[in-house]
Length: 268
Figure 1: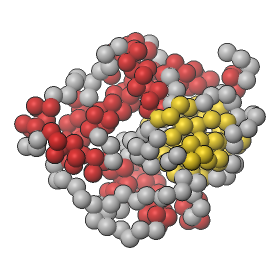
Figure 2: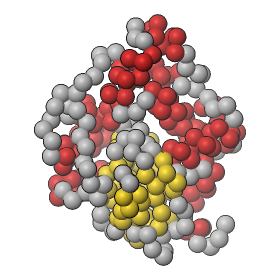
Figure 3: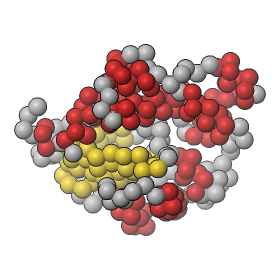
Figure 4: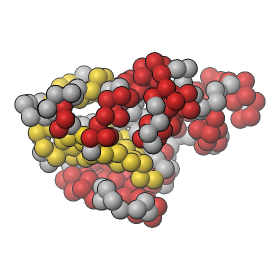
């Protein structure tokens, strides 16, 4: 590891179910193209954060607020010498929808937020790293963000089109993600054919069922890695075929390898 790379670090924690928080300083690290299944909303703290989003090159400078939507392909890299830093929250889209009273998910077309109200809200989303988890506080933060995203989208709130069984399907997938998912069991337990289930799930949560399962496995793997377990053990406990399988999926989801992610955590 070079002296420059030793300046790289990451602080990360699951603040509440569906609401994660991170802060990072990166010098040379480049994130390969990847997708989240959450809203990723943050602020650049120093340097220039360059990224490609919806086919266009972007550059976020200190104080700039950025909004990345679920399942949108993006990358990340230093925009100039010296690297960059950011603070970010990852919020599950279902929480945003629930906070808006069941309205359709808002979409802010420009990833570099220009809306003043949204820019004013973002600094309030971040708890102190040492503060205990408080469900009431996190609920307030989600509600605050959801309202700001809805206003910044400029679209009228519309009722969401959701299948009433999708919440149960999501809970089923989350509970069994490490064990392997049977389509036949899903069809039998939820009374839907596999193609209707896939269509309705994407409408409700913005990602496919298989993508949701992969990301829940990655959540389990990240937790195991953060606790100090080996990469091979983390892969096995999360339901991946092997460490290489986990590494491929980790890079596709987060733009870096689990080994590098672990090194950044340990450097913080």
